[in-house]
Length: 247
Image (cartoon, rainbow, N blue to C red):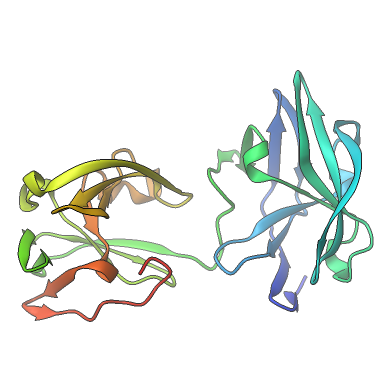
């Protein structure tokens, strides 16, 4: 199916087999899932109703309205010993013809998600996002308010579609005495779970993936910094601070 759009919503079919589980049971299993970009950053999965265990769906008698997708009929999902109110939206009469007769499950409401036989975490992977991690001999210096907090000639540079290059530095090249853990945790379906530090008293300026997902193993234990919030010198030249949603 060719990609279609209505307003800011984009729809296309994926060739991957997609499954979601609740209470130890498969609630939906399809080779005809739709990727629907409800927000710009990543898509959601929509399952054909024929590939969903309809005995697990119980209408709540309410609907969620979207100007682009129309009314999604709210359903409770029950499977095994679990019951999750409002965990699914069923689209029967959407102005987007492609999603009519499809079900969208709230990602966090379900126990597990699989693409083919690999578990996927946090949200669906965007097929238009690529992550490349390359070792480099470029000289990277990081400063916060004029204080050098990292200086390295052996960074790994992470190139991710739609984001600025990120410089992941070995811990021996970082002033760890200036870093304090903040307790902040974020999740990425391409890299895994990150932990954060304040730097020289400024909150959440640095992060690291202790045990990244297999495709991002090269950054394990390395530390990166928000280019948007501090000064990065690359081969001696101060880099312009990028303007992103993290700024």
